[in-house]
Length: 397
Image 1 (cartoon, rainbow, N blue to C red):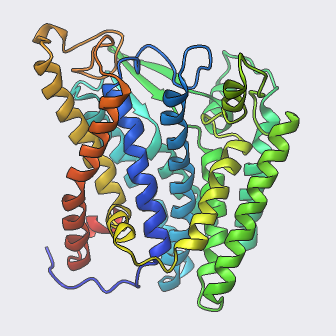
Image 2 (cartoon, rainbow, N blue to C red):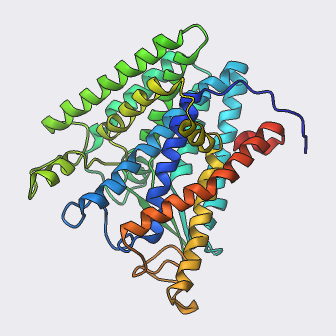
Image 3 (tube, helix red, strand yellow):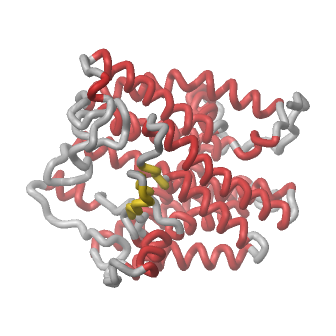
């Protein structure tokens, strides 16, 4: 292992800040999954059963996946400033496959604590990995081609919402995995199931658009012009979202509707489809993200410095906070009187997580804050370690 100083390009504060912010918020939803009393038996965005606070707890975390992909696209462009097209292409493809393997081998074990891998989840890092592979393949074309393909996929994939496909055909399974499915389960024998939870191309479109926006960080563009563009683009995307959502014509397969009162009608308006991410879901999340980028480039206060620590070690934080949550789950499992005979619940994919287990949202928020605080110094250590070492695996983290 080399201890040579890693001489990388100075980091951009706004990217680290926004990435760190969404990483912190992301942990709230995962804490809810493990510890909320109704997480295994109800959907927090089901307006017939949810509460406003529960809905918000889930809704606020919608910003995380699309913005992380968008920022990954920007980072890919910045990474390419010091590489040839061929070098960047190879790096992105390798890192994409690294993330896919990491999802299957490491994340599934952390998520479930099941060494038999009875259920293999292909979710977040699966989609991120394939998005990176696709971007890596397209890098060898040109920036205009990448922008066009990203735009067509982003704005056009909801055209398939109303198409009825043969549920038993192989082509339908492929289309579902690539474009349209909310989730596919594939039994592979021996009591094992592969669950494809994230489609590929709608998520990849966000990374492609992020790469296109990354060009605004080139040395030829003044920071003030970039910030103004991000602000105008963010406001424009939000305006487009509000207009298209209000007329209920295109952009999300689930139209909003009048509910039992004005508050729940408001929630219905913002209750958008994440899997696969609809056009309006993308607009609702990316628009505000661009505004944050426009205002955070020169942030230097204590709060921003703390948040950036999480943004500088994203994969370490991602895996680490899941591991911490599951270890905490084991402690609470036994502390609440559960026994070894209850470790496995046929209705739950996670060991030590019976469907009837859990606490109120008040305790979910307290546990979330605790997890974020505990992860701070490990993330800070890992970033400093990565910065001062050149081991091959660190460039993929």
